[in-house]
Image 1 (cartoon, one colour):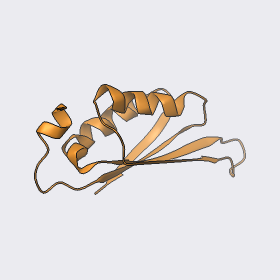
Image 2 (spheres, rainbow, N blue to C red):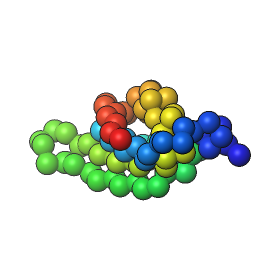
Image 3 (cartoon, one colour):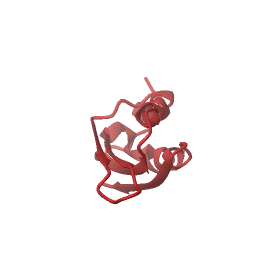
Length: 93
């Protein structure tokens, strides 16, 4: 059993993290690698490339964490902020 599964509060709920980052080929694998190191499998991942602003080529990634990982959402967000190419991470319950 993973640490995320063992220590999750009973009244937890899924958390959505939204990541804004450079549109680079390795960005998604770096984000998923961060989750893999924490033994977290996301419920949902949605990525879209935004090149509608001249001179900006951004990737927007929405990642829904399972309720068992909601207690770790602040840690995950902090780790995502340290990923090369990430500009902003926002979360919601």
